[in-house]
Image 1: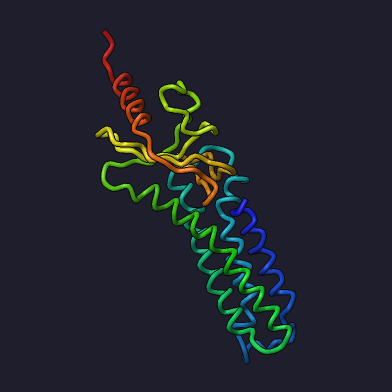
Image 2 (image 1 turned 45 degrees about the horizontal axis):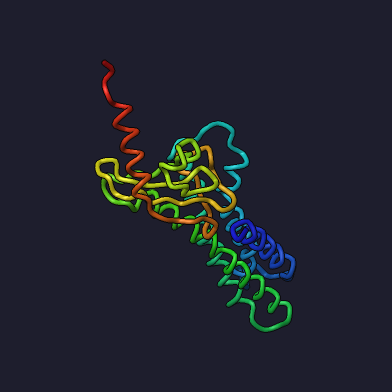
Length: 216
């Protein structure tokens, strides 16, 4: 999938740049180019934070804990893009430097998918406005005729307004789901289908009414 492929390319690009530099570079003469491989490596690793958190986490994580890897991922993508651009601009001239320019360009390109994935996720979780909440729902536990079979994978990431019956915005994963232990799992872009469902909103409100109905 594009997300995992981008992470692999980012690590490979950082490694290629490191392998192409002159080990006898004078740090005082060109400190930026000397430390670029370190910055590239840090950026590539930070971009992988949500994936690392998914593989390492055992117990359920709170929303705040789940957001930290995503924020680190954004920082990593920014570092990768910055160092990649510097790698291009500082690598003009000899054939070796041309190889460095290629590595920098691949690093910049590889950071695009993770960056869009993280930014889109943060907007989906926090950009719905007042009263709108984000979370996930296993629609596979609901009767198919009630939900309209909106997602064959069962679990959807959704945001909706509990105070009124407006269509639920949802994302259905087509591939990997990261940080499944959190209340808002990460669906990397573009590996999901998105849509709106008024039918699902009506089902959720009916469930809430039944849950708070006093016993006779």
